[in-house]
Image 1 (cartoon, rainbow, N blue to C red):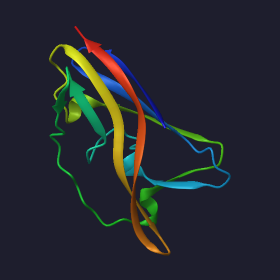
Image 2 (image 1 turned 90 degrees about the vertical axis):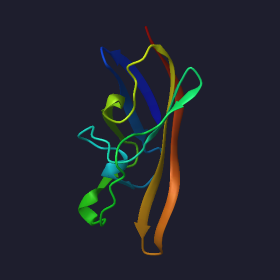
Image 3 (image 1 turned 135 degrees about the vertical axis):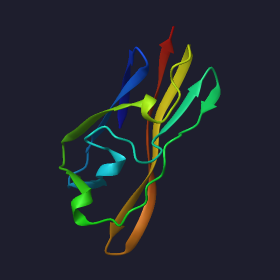
Length: 127
């Protein structure tokens, strides 16, 4: 997992890339890598000048069905872009440190498990 970012006027746009380096397909809930770029849960750690910026959106719980999953085939990459201003206050000037850090639910034959997807940490300067 890797992220990169671009500053826009009132937003920081984060590009999230997940690559399946394994030998078999990998299933991921779409809400953990939203193809429409809309956040429905906290996905990032965001700090401005060493002060944590809290996620302000609602955490939406819903019943998980098979159609909620994306499949990332072996050797393939999934990419999306997400604007942080949806649910983080990123308009003030400063140095922003950002990391994708989401708890990911996985439902299988042995029940539900939660694990973490973490990316590299990036820095975005807003002047």
